[in-house]
Amino acid sequence: DSGVTQTPKHLITATGQRVTLRCSPRSGDLSVYWYQQSLDQGLQFLIQYYNGEERAKGNILERFSAQQFPDLHSELNLSSLELGDSALYFCASSPGGGPQETQYFGPGTRLLVL
Amino acid sequence: GDSVTQMEGPVTLSEEAFLTINCTYTATGYPSLFWYVQYPGEGLQLLLKATKADDKGSNKGFEATYRKETTSFHLEKGSVQVSDSAVHFCALAGGSYIPTFGRGTSLIVHP
Image 1 (cartoon, rainbow over the protein chains, first blue to last red):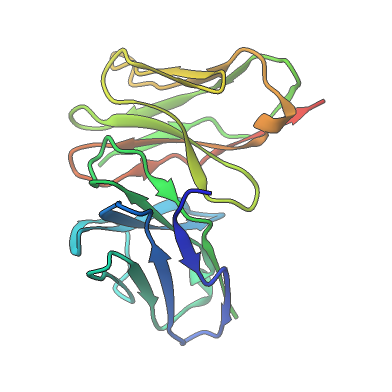
Image 2 (tube, rainbow over the protein chains, first blue to last red):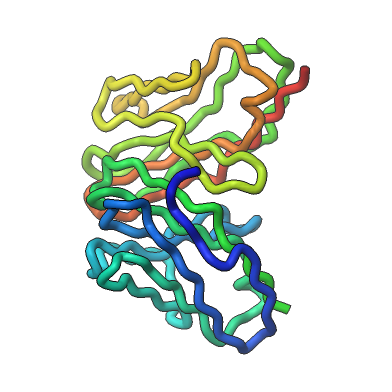
């Protein structure tokens, strides 16, 4: 158990809908990362937050947005969903967000868009 | 931009065989290098890391050495076990704060 929690574990929805994925980092970690894992694209970095502020942005679509709240939990919002958005979405956390730090991954949310 | 290339799998071995999974990278500056492992149905977890050239990371019998001259970070283990069966990811993180992962290599170890 990494100490990172993600909810829900599974999500099934329809095209065009909007969903929110939630992540709680390990106690004491200030940085949160979001990733998308799919068979064709592999593990893609989406976005990183550090203590409430966006620190780095990867291949995140404009239909996707995220935020980190004062209690340090984070939410990833996916809107106007398409079939191709079906994937595993992972959240990870680290103490300070530096590139040399180990990231601790949650168990993931599996999203299926029908 | 940064990139990580690792050998495609699956790599299939018998128990107690020697393992090498190749990983090469392209990055500016001096990134930190990582190997993460993903067991079925779980998130990734750190296996080992190295933060500067010539550093050797090691854990659970796995080793990898940060070779800047060949831009490589190959994963090795002298004697694999069935419990090592998982997907192994090579990754780097540098000054841009954007982590980059390889496609992953599936390792299957037979008794």
